[in-house]
Length: 175
Ligand code: ABN
Image (cartoon, rainbow, N blue to C red; front, side, top):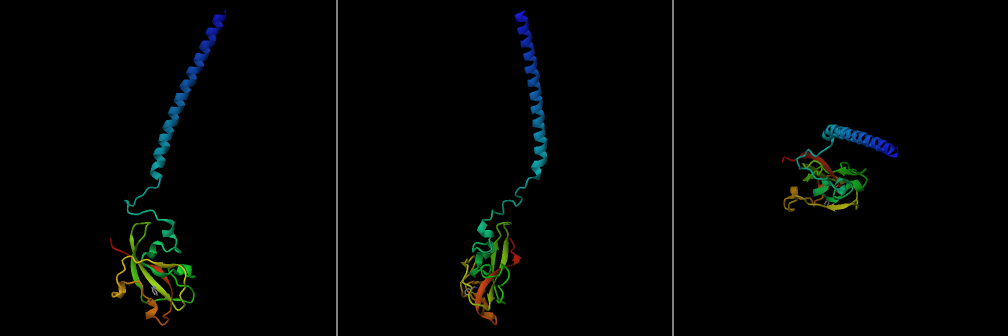
């Protein structure tokens, strides 16, 4: 009698284990198919670099208009107007943009393209004295004045006093 009960318990346990195992494998197969379907739908939506390797990651300073390393300042020699009450493109109150400028070429790290940047001196106030930067990319010696950046461009204006420099994008360089 004891043996019969033991066999019955064994059979019952075996049946339970088998059905549990079947359910488990079915469930995991369904989970795998689900993951594959969702993954297949979501993957194409993920962002990826379409620039063909042209652009580079910009460092925080290259994106900070109050840093000398700001990407537009690659050929700027002077005080940043962003530190003197102005902006990247406008003179501080009371100062006026020079009529004559020096134009440099700077690479925007975000899109990898070269931009023509006009460095207008702001004139009519004493030298600002903050954020002095001196970058000279593609600058040429002073005997070629138009391609030299160590010049007070306010000299062509009525107000010849130099205050600070703005950097205005005036075009995209051919590549
Ligand atoms: N263009 C900026 C500047 C002004 C005065 C003297 C040197 C450079």
